[in-house]
Amino acid sequence: MSEEKVVVLNFWPSMFGARVIMALEEKDIKFEYKEEDVFGDKTDLLLQSNPVHKKIPVLIHNGKPVCESNIILEYIDEVWNNDKTLRLLPSDPYEKAKCRFWADLIDKKVFDAGRGTWTKKGKEQEEAKREFIETLKVLETELGEKFYFGGNETVSVVDLVLISYYPWFHTWETIGDFSLENHTPKLMDWVRRCLARPAISKSLPDRLKILGRVSQIIKVHEFFYGY
Image (cartoon, rainbow, N blue to C red; front, top):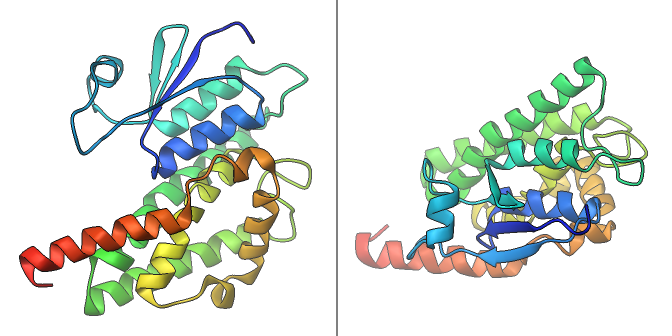
């Protein structure tokens, strides 16, 4: 496997790309990283690799592209599945289905509500904040007393999907004026446990850099549209 060619197409702030990189790092898979400017001119490689959606991330394995982040995670787990690498999904069909359920819920609930904390105003922003916090409370309950969502030994797909949003938490908290430490302290303990894993901490984008970029977007929007 070490001689195989693995390429990741990504845009640095993307939570969807971050989870792919974390999975590769957790399994100690060597790969080449290629940055894509998704708001500028997309490269021919991206357009050829993902002609339907034309989006990142894309994993290219020996010339074959795999698209959609959670599909990529399952692909990585199935291809690199020897005894020396951790498993991101359990072998039991029921437990695997549960992992898929929670990963899907995170992307459906956390993404939209989190985005609403800085793109909405007034009552709509407050509703987005409420939904975001309530979703994290549900996830905190699901975590329970476990070390990770994958159990007490290692991380799972659910851990990687949720922690991929962490660099954005600072932006949503700052602009939305709330603190997750106050609302979901046990989940924030889980965040710190995840960040203690080198494969995760080195793969996540800089949260301050994300806040700076979002702040610039807001200023430009307010300049042109007045709100």
